[in-house]
Image 1 (cartoon, rainbow, N blue to C red):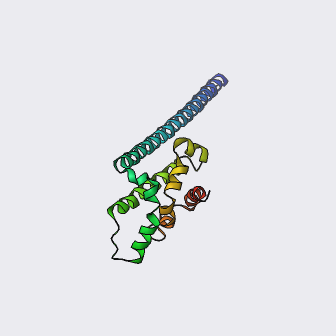
Image 2 (spheres, rainbow, N blue to C red):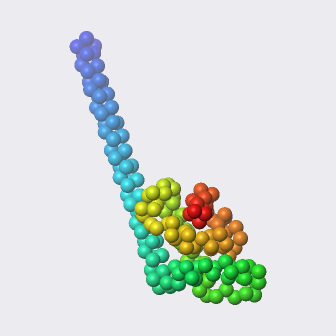
Image 3 (cartoon, rainbow, N blue to C red):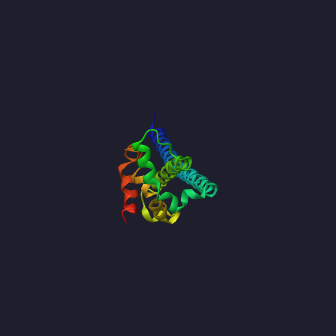
Length: 167
């Protein structure tokens, strides 16, 4: 092989290397774009799910307005104590519904807390969390089953909810 052939081979090798590097960089950029789009699509899907959950909660409160009535919710602790102390005590259907409603509500609040990564301002911009938590604070502090909240929710979320109840 002569020097000209070697130079041509070297040039071809360099050009192929440059093309390969260019394709690799292009592929990396495209992958990052798609990952960003995937994250944005996932965030939108999660936000849409939250919106649907919120709509369902509002539908429930329209169907059963007493669930959001302070005169009803303030009686929770008495009813729950009676039920805990007497296994034969029949919890009124309204209070059974209220217990289930609050499970739905606090699960929703937990999902919102996770979505916004605990950012108070963003959560408060999305929903009226303060008033909701304060209205339903008795059932949070005194669930039908002892330890229910400790078992069901993260410590961070429990502290978040308790901060509104205690303020």
